[in-house]
Image 1 (cartoon, protein in one colour):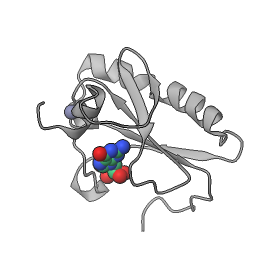
Image 2: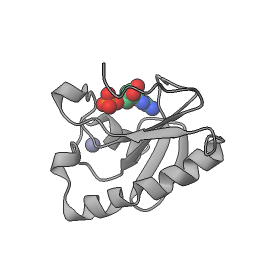
Image 3: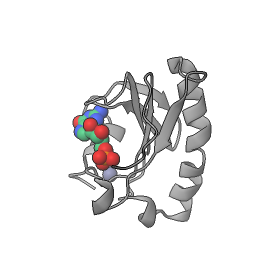
Image 4: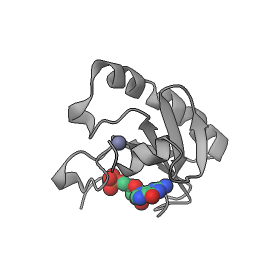
Length: 115
Ligand code: 5GP
Ligand code: ZN
């Protein structure tokens, strides 16, 4: 996936502020943060979105909540609250077509999930 931005971040061809890495997952700070804590958690292997997961990627993605808890704790928002979400497809506003989960926190995020 030569032109995929997040593949390039996973391959360290494009710099990112990495906060977590294991064999299959990478987490880094969002470049345009929408909250004081705004991290992206991705499978290293390319996958366009939730609908395109292979069994191996689904297995890696299944560990994302655990990783998110650890990152929320490290970012100091475990108690104040945080949100984990993935956009999928045009109506969600997904703009990068490499599966990623947003971890947002550090401010009141609002009760509405859509406007
Ligand atoms: P989406 O809208 O696809 O759910 O989220 C894509 C996210 O990727 C956006 O929040 C955007 O700010 C972030 N993003 C886009 N380009 C880059 C980049 O080059 N580096 C980092 N760290 N984040 C990026
Ligand atoms: Zn990719």
